[in-house]
Image (cartoon, rainbow, N blue to C red; front, side, top):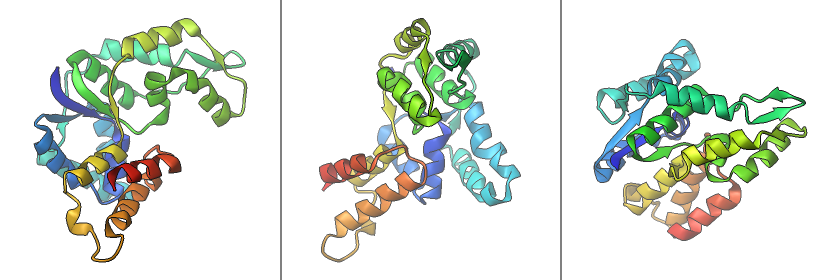
Length: 228
């Protein structure tokens, strides 16, 4: 196994917006492996936001992490595998005969690269692809709720995608934050008052949820309960 994590854009954005991106170099040092982003993820994190005034500084923060080698651009993306998995995924679910494009290039580059390199895990908040990998039976319900329509499934494509991606560990940004807390990286932010640790956990976990981490309220409370 290659000691590496492949990051989708979402978790990096969540950490940057939540003012928690500083935990990444600390986590990387503790992990002892590489933190990779693919070219498509780089585009989502840097090139595209640099064109929008509101998001320029977020892009510059990511550029600094690349300059500092906290994040490393992974160039050996298996493009044929990416294209094949995207084709499978985007021809699995349909509404009235029209296929749903549910997976984007960046997240699939991360997944395919992790598969081909036998990496430790993919860091991803995007619920659609996570469910595709972790709980394919829940996908139909999610898409039906999202589009408010009856969803048809190509079972052959679904099973093929599931078999090719089976066993890929998925880590969410909120779990990175929980790990940082466990390792003591956040201890200086515990306020000197009763229930200080709970106040800290509420602040960082809910910040992550409201800044893009696909996590439910009950999951936030469950994580907090385990950490206290």
